[in-house]
Image (cartoon, rainbow, N blue to C red; front, side):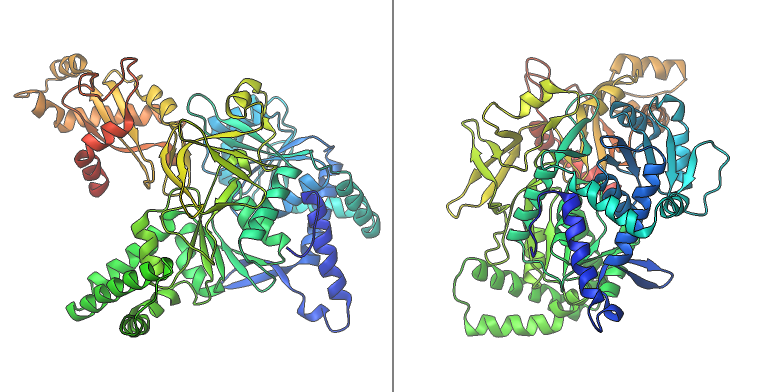
Length: 614
């Protein structure tokens, strides 16, 4: 990191002033460096630091004309785009607190979150997001204005404004020099311990909790991340993970900005493969699901190739894995293996790297555990994956593997300003300036995860190996992380679905998976009653549970009960069990809590079949 700073607003001012000074030097203005790039039509177009600064100051001044003052909460519901960044820097620069959420959330979820934090203004991206919010507008007691980023959205709803109009009004409210001085003064008022953002994260039960993050939390994590990963002015990151997620916000946004690197926004998750070839990134933050997709496309292409090329590919992967294993272990590589790897690289691996644009220094993986075999595949192809670990409550990064000493199967060493220790019961505890201030309006929950000495209980089980790397062995807290990096609390979903007359017990599945499935123990008495009432004939229970009519009826119930769930929380496929889970079989505890790991292991064939069929 080239500059030191105390707050995120101070970072914004210092970095933009730095490049503004460079651009006023002789012969520098025409080659002004791009801070962000977004695709317009068929081409990627860049935005300079001066353009970002001007747009941010104008939008902040526009918020001021709407009555925004220090401490006000402002929601952001949008996909990754320039306006998201401008909104964030403007809000926190003038002393506000932003509340970014996933654009995939439902109206009901938005209603809870924005009421809980008492949002004064909510910024949305498009007509779809606006309509979703308008459904619950009457429930939002503190909401005064909605601002829409897309300029083509027309509505007669009162106090719904266009982003461009707020920018225009802000520019007209003060002269340029006055506006710049005002924004710098506001940024200077920001203190290290000021709360600047609320990030809502799934709990194991009930409604999501609002993680309170301060300037110190985020700045310390930016410093730690920048120290662990070598990022500089010449680097370019392709961003596709949601900026509302703590992982992307710190590592793929603030850290890149602090290090003077450029960020290009992918058009969507579906276009990432195409966008990589267009912008040729040097770094990418990612979740395991991306690697699964890349590997899947490669393997699908190979399956369509000739038998000879398939054999060459399999030979190359074998050579690559042997080469990687020796290299990571620090052992010597024989001339024969070195020659084989060079040939494999020319025939296979070089072509795989071309899919990433050909300049990639490393992927930075987080949000969910990276399967070992997936990491080995990419390392074999000469693509480095640095795996990190953290929680929203820790801003979020706690540890990461280093490029100089990658270690597959671990999440590396702690950041220089983070302490990690293992409790007597094996739980991973963390301490540092990055640990959250607490949960908004929930002192009891805060005390439950941060002890009197300031140690954060992560809810994960792990060990520190001989090399000093953290290895996560299990999950103590009952919460999933999908392969896309989404947190999913199973208990509230299970509790909701058991409202169905058809369902007696249910076990939600989806940890490290693309989507959720479920094992359902039906209410056998009601199922038989339903069959009688609806004239369903069946020879035995087995045939009844495989009846299309019954399965469709249960599906209708499940769909109706899932109306207010986010897309990634919804059960897409289920299997009916022919007996109840029992204490005797070790599947549930005497308190009737499901022993999830035992159920998953015992019924792995049924689980894998659901995902294979889907």
